[in-house]
Length: 272
Image (cartoon, rainbow, N blue to C red; front, top):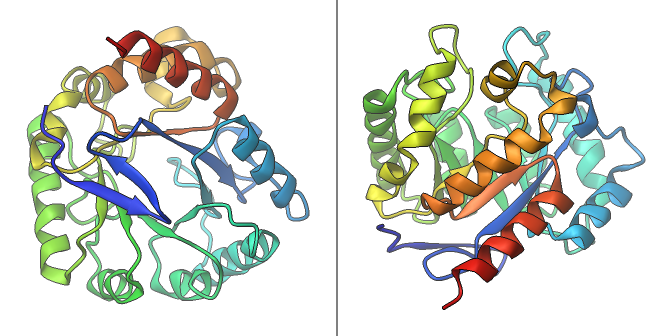
């Protein structure tokens, strides 16, 4: 399995021979599909510290729900939310990535202590891509042609990742992690598309970059089990274990303590 490159985020090595890393999710959006991930202003500091203590290597902070059917939110509203949230975390030393696709929001984020950028649009917007490049920060970039997650099926996802790798080279972004965009990002995508990506997850290491597994509590797991987001923990953990076995270098999860236990057991079992 190819993982030649190692991405460094705030001195945290991801990929290569580094341990599988854990990214905890904090949402500042009350519209989030999983209400348990929403953290209101005034509670961000305690939530982030708790996740760090439970084993999170970094926190991914977002202020806009990307679930299908989410209510519209202007970039200004998103920026105000993330500005207030990051103000609580400045100076804590916690490694933070910000999840946004708007250059206006990123501009606000860069006034704070952030260490990486999570771009679900795969650098499709030139203005945003240049802002990411100018920041000098490492990026998590999702398989997307024009809109987030618009690649349908394995072949299209591999093609989208190739496009993303080309964009990174074009803009001079050298430190990045690839995200194959598992999830129902566009109406054309069906549950079986997500299962196909997961079954073939090792294919995404072919680009020689660390790969992110982001499946926590997602719809295709819930539809299989006939469970609402609040009841999808066991399914998420089972799938996460298999994706780590297939080469995931970092896992994005709502459930930090449980996922940290999973990764610790996995690492123990892999020792020879």
